[in-house]
Amino acid sequence: MKSSFTHNAERRDSLKQIAILSGLLAGVGYSSLAEAAYNKAAFDSKSVNEAIKLQGGGNLVESKEVLLNAPDYAENGAAVPLGVSTGLSGVRKILILVEKNPANLAASFEVSESIEANFSTRIKMNQTSDVFAVAVMADGRALFSKKEVKVTIGSCGG
Amino acid sequence: MTEPTRIRAQVQGGKTTVRVLMSHEMESGHRKDGSGKTVPSWFIQEVTISLNGKVILDADFGPSMSKNPYLQFVIKGGKAGDKLSLSWKDNKGQTRTDESSVA
Image 1 (tube, rainbow over the protein chains, first blue to last red):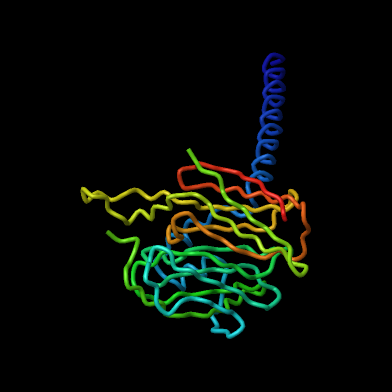
Image 2: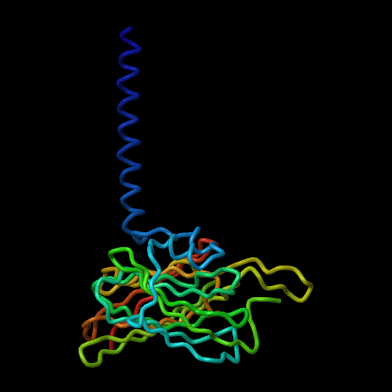
């Protein structure tokens, strides 16, 4: 009996050590990686609405407060310049989506207190499509603007 | 091998405009090569930008972002000499971190 007791105590000790060690490792991982993990489901989504929902956006409401600066025509679908901004407060995320790309969601930006909800970037467009700029608000609303960009030479495809 | 990210940040009128150009193929996984074989996807998924060690922007990219992704954003405030750091991680698990100072 005694031997099994000490054995258990040892086992408990080593379990405790493992627990402490994994706690430390988890702590390191948490601080070196950012808070939010990559939302693969949202980026794999084949629907604009679903991708927005998977990024935490609720009711979709068109809004003039969300500004999408995109060209009418894109001569080169491999690099279409876009600007998205809003002066609204309480913005949690800014999303950029392309309806007719194989993967709808192009980018998701988390808006911290230190930065403005104002981003410019370049995206690929397979074909002429609506482009969506979405501001996911702290209260869950998803305010959006959209614009059709006509692509004369596509990218992404073969 | 990965190439350095170009980071330029300038203070103007109490705001800092940051422009970054990451160097990456950003293969969508939908393109076919000369022999008709699909080129596997290879793109940056996560980008983290810190100002003086504090995370100010977390961005996630899909395969629709252009080759050599460009990003411009605006920091409220900021001053010359502030340290900016950008890290990215692609879907193959490769990472890169580059630093720059606000001018």
